[in-house]
Length: 347
Length: 293
Image (cartoon, rainbow over all chains, first blue to last red; front, side):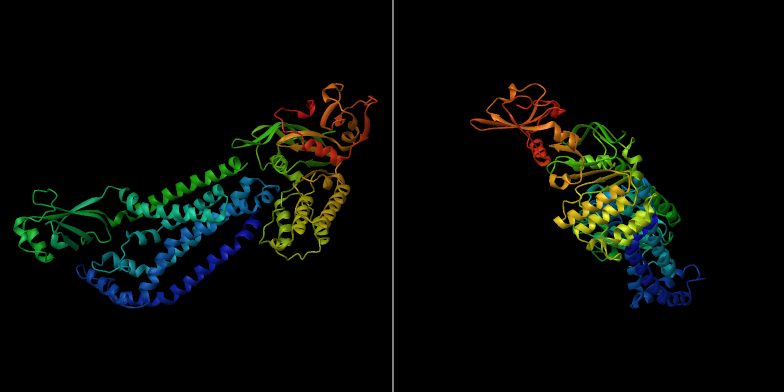
């Protein structure tokens, strides 16, 4: 059975190996120079106070080149898309093609149980899916280590090189989450393919479901895994932006909290001296006009501060493991369902 | 003699439709069994139940005295349209059989495929329907099965390939001691090779038995017009047609027909099967025991 699974899977495996090899070459060619730029940037061993500036300088130097932003983006996007591609091209056809072409009638009437047939197929392709995605991720993380270290402490770095660890793309591309996504997307494709029994519809449905989950998780699930920490900060002490509206209201967006480098800022709310939420511009500050620096210092004088909700960088691995565990749990449930479906429903 | 295939009250329902209903039969070992019926009669359903690809909704089916899934090593199966992996070569299909079966006979497989006159490296997707059926039969035969189940093996073949396939099958049956069940919607295909017949119509089993028994117990009666209900009770009317003056009846009876008003002739297998197939579909079980009106 291992022989047959491998024989039917080898084209897909070869495609993945080729993509991985091409990416490895790209990283190996550009990586050493990136590391030497980092070594020359002075970030290692920097004095507190100057680190942020050095990191900003390093990232803007990289940002000016034509190579690093492209390779970085290519890698991150590739890793984020890899599970979807695996779900669509490895997972969805695994059962659907057998059902569509009728070859399951050949396979399931040999002297081997359906459960063993499925076990071997799922193990081979599932482990390959996880290994390929995680391999992709580890290589990119190794290559991008200087960028990630600098982005963590750089207050003004532009995207994409300034992606902090909690940036939705960076979070999904690094750590252990690619393992969970790959396992889940693969078995999702297998399940949908088994239930629908046709390859093309199974691919489409797999894509829609997986894309919806990949959007929903960072938006609505991940921020609620832990209750956020709060910090009360003065208006002048943060990197971010202030918006004012015609109807005399204002709001802050906070991008970087100097006291919490690498933190994930989930929301920022202005509060007045009494600690109440504030959004309308006090009468005393109306004269300062729409010019934001003036408005900011005026609001500060009025006692307005910002209540920042954030997830500290120290929770990064807790977030990573919990999310991976959730996806692995769902993947396990779908695996169980596939076995049940094969034994009960497809008969 | 033990039964290779035994069903009791066997039924399979899809949604509200019964693909096979209340089927009770026992196929003795050592026969080439023809499973005949029009398209959609439940032949494929019965064979798929026999090989465990389907699970029954009602009743039980036993193959070689056990549940089908526990007997897969001893059953050779060729599914309808002979599915093969289009991307695998002929040789790789043989390797597949060797890897997935404990009793695989590589020599037999090579001998069979050698007669096929196909390139071993050819992709199975490029084979003709006849070659595909032969490849499927080779895979089934090389398992060295005790029971061979073939679902419409010759339906997609041209007359020449049909003859070649059935000839090969007969050689294999003679060579190895095995029982065969093959389905077809054409009696002509089965007449030459089968010695046992099962007629399925509209998901009901109409009749099952040895061909020679069927032939000696069915008579075509021609005589003056007469109401079939007036026949002796042991004469079961399978089909009746009337003109103004004359009646033609196909009756089944174990006793000789003594009424001198009848001209009695023997009936061919094809006419016999057609008579059963054209019976109006009825709801009752063991339909063949009822008297037709």
